Length: 175
Image (cartoon, rainbow, N blue to C red; front, side, top):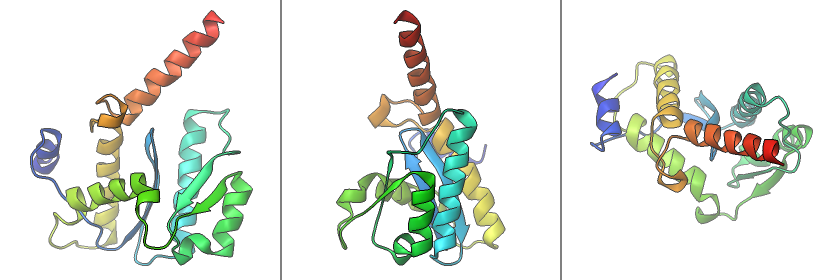
């Protein structure tokens, strides 16, 4: 494990800010979908959406996005017809925050801030998109499987979701 990841795990100085653009889909269960691209366009967020839905369905065959809400800022990539259609086709309802107000999107802003400070800003220069993608994949894996999250009882998101599923399953057996 690289020294920077060891430092993060033990509360040492950490890092990153994306040199380019990224799309992130996050929730209590961690980061479900992400992409690295050189511009903020509809394909960036659409492909992150597709990955998030695939990730969720891979771990829960009965998953349906119907009734879920996708919240974003008012960037043009999120307000495009193609992305709105992708949300609708997935069963998600779109919700766009007010311009200049990061509070209504605080979870995502916090996650992106961590990503930038813990990975991207820490690296002075990147050799290219492939390096950013590789390091982002490693950071997302760490974030989902090792990083302790105070909002969910100081455990990693994957562990929290596993406990939740076990609790729901055992309650169903009792009922």
